[in-house]
Length: 430
Image (cartoon, rainbow, N blue to C red; front, top):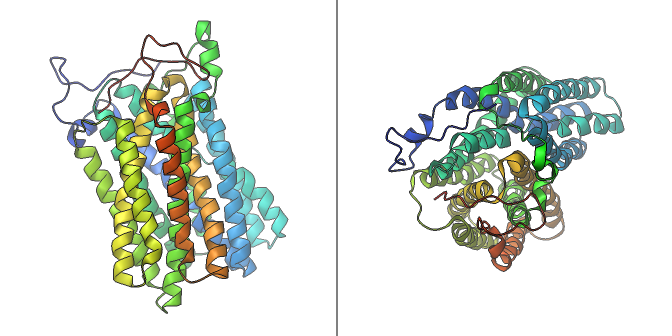
């Protein structure tokens, strides 16, 4: 059974400040952090590696984007099911066959592309490749939940994981691009499969830190119910769909904007500024000892995100777009971090991995939808029309948050649970 040690200094008093130093000194944390980072790195390499390989073999960005989109959608749809299986049977039981299937599927997709197989065959290989992407990020977050039970460091851990995700999405695409351009177009996808296999197996080997599997007994109904049955989780999924719309809308619209001004090379710079804002605010969020309740922080932070996203379409110069992109990026991390923090107080440990995967999948699904809609707007309307997608996505999500914010308040200990996975006592996390 996994350890349930909370992070407290000698004497039993809570840490005075939820800093990163306190967090990284948590006993046993590095045993899952290092292999976890290796195992989640391929997540950021997969889409770009597929695009570069399929475009090289077919000569069509449209075909490459369609195959990559099939992978992303299948991942978003199957991720929650993978998380639910991990909660039910343990992370190791899901990871080992999952990484094996992913490696085989990814290599099959590579071989088919190199053999100039028909597009339908690439789609057939893309679906299991995406569906078997290991959900290591949510699994790491679930392990933090076990290690830091009842600790104010949970907000710091959520911030640390958000920064780690951003770092992954900086390093992964760079590595994929370097391999595909300097070695061979297939090298990115081959490396992605190899890293997933090795990193996933090493992470799965850390049995002592994985969340305990709930026994049958009288808790069987709770254990088998879906985390999506918790109303607050459904509200968070809507919020994370809006966050995904920002990522997807920015990717397409920045590329279209820089192309329209004859400076396509600035695309990477502008998106880097956007990502840097996300990382910097994520680091700051984890270092602050928050006093406000998480659900109030989420509404406040999301309001700022919606306002920043709503201003993007007004930018008509590179400096202004860079400034607004930086501001939008700085508003994303607080919303992500607070959303993940709320899972700790809304969802029992036996369904937490699944809850995290619902949120991760929502970002991926929102991003996929935003890429499609923003592309159509850029083609059919004016340059920069794709920036309307982040505005629309975040405003709709904010309206849902404000209307249903009461569902983000954890149930009291003496209140009976309604439908869903059952109730747990309220936990202070800020």
